[in-house]
Image 1 (cartoon, one colour):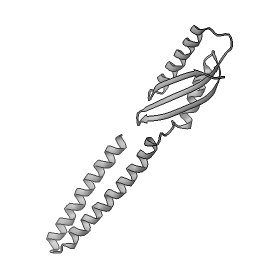
Image 2 (cartoon, one colour; image 1 turned 90 degrees about the horizontal axis):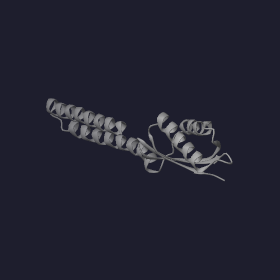
Image 3 (tube, rainbow, N blue to C red; image 1 turned 90 degrees about the vertical axis):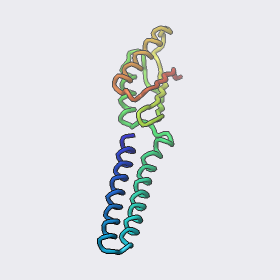
Image 4 (cartoon, rainbow, N blue to C red; image 1 turned 180 degrees about the vertical axis):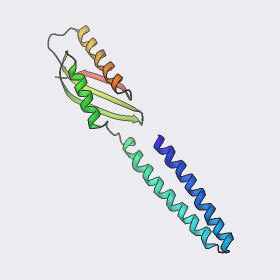
Length: 144
């Protein structure tokens, strides 16, 4: 989000500066071509900025997963709980630039009661959200 705002503001300021020099040179040299060149330069600048924004936003729109380093740390946190044998599968997706949804399929130790499993799920969610506050929604399901 900050990237989009900064890039947009940069484009605005650069466009104003280019337009100023185009008009200044047109009046100074009495040649309208400088104004036309400045207009084309602003257009090219806006195209470049829009392509950069499309490249940055596309991954979010297509459902980019959380980074591998983050997912490895999440799996390590989950497997550190004494009720978990292992994390079988994990799935994550950015819902917005600051919000990730995470699904873990875990294998619990045999013989745990419902309360123990519920407590383990709560502990794992809290430890993940403490370390990664941008992971807003966490779903933990038992795997087979």
